[in-house]
Amino acid sequence: MKFIKKTFKWILLLVGLTIAILYLTNTDYLIKAVRTIYLKGHTTAYLEDYKEFDNKTIEKGEPQLWPNHKNYNSVNETENLKKLNEKLETVAYVIIKNDSIWFENYYDGFNENSKSNSFSMAKSYVSGLMGKAIEQGFIKGLDQPVGDFFPEFSQGLAAKMTVGDLSSMSSGTNWDEAYYSPFSITTRAYFDDDLSSVILGLKVVDEPGQKYKYASGDTELLAMVIEKATEKKLYDYLTESFWAPLGCENSTLWQVDSKDHDLVKAFCCIASNAKDFARFGKLYKDHGKWNGNQVIDSTFVSKSVTPRFEESPEYGYGWWLLKRNGKNFFMMRGHLGQYVIVEPSDNLIIVRLGNLSGKEEGRVDPFTEDIYTYIDEAYNMLKN
Image 1: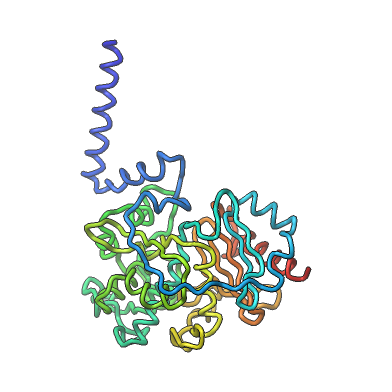
Image 2: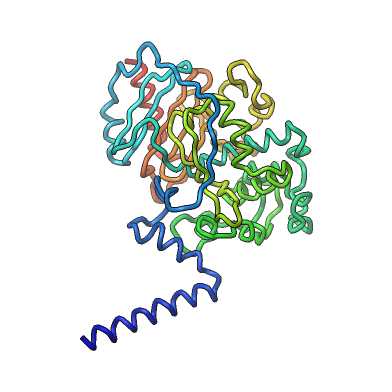
């Protein structure tokens, strides 16, 4: 018994010492990471982790239901699609043809209204909110310096960084996009209680606006700019600009860093469902119009789904861009394989949500093989 008591005391001492070291080294965010992610058996963020964080509600307006296509669910999934959905633990797969639900299926206890984390699909919404803020005169344009809003970025190379650079992932900051290292700035941003202090500590180390480098910190800083420009919380601005006008059927949640600081994790973390996520894809497919109303400027939409840099044709302003089989797709894309894939000329939207993506070690292609399969098998189903 004495041995057990002594051992327990040493464990408590070790735990206390570890916590103290974390606070002294400014890595105490790892305490939240362990509590919310690692102790639950995950090595990274996961689909339903929004339940472990502070959230703000994005209210729905008057719901506008998607109509079912005349051939609704008349074709089964292909064998290739079934295998992939099982392997990568898909929770939702939806095909929308001519603005009608042509096929939908849900898996692993999820249904059409189940919430799951958008991860980086949220970046497309933030870019759209930037466009809305420009249209409404809160932001002068894509070329307005970030330093106009945050003096921390008004000297040296940082003074050249513009709002458009943030949306097109070309800020030139020292952000390191690493999801699985507990000590990366990406991990810190996900768990830190004071996200703005993390972002305002970034340094601009390369000439802004010269080349694409994917960086979640760019989107977070963009969100901070939008909030300062509009004097509105981003979750409220999303509600009034898109969520309510697009007739989303469900209210949704957007994670914030903490109740005290109340800053959205703009680079990720809108918890919603496949058919409500699809509405933003439809808005861009229809050049910013919804039910005949111009919700967002069509010129901005066109610019958003056009590559900014010739050497990086895979990215525009907040949207991924893909050419396949002679077709031009643009897409919202998130960690672990969250996709809203749009092909305007075919009036087609494909949504896939799930627990895993088709990551492949050493792959040069910016698009993983699963994306191609989700697209190809949708077209194979439509042929039938």
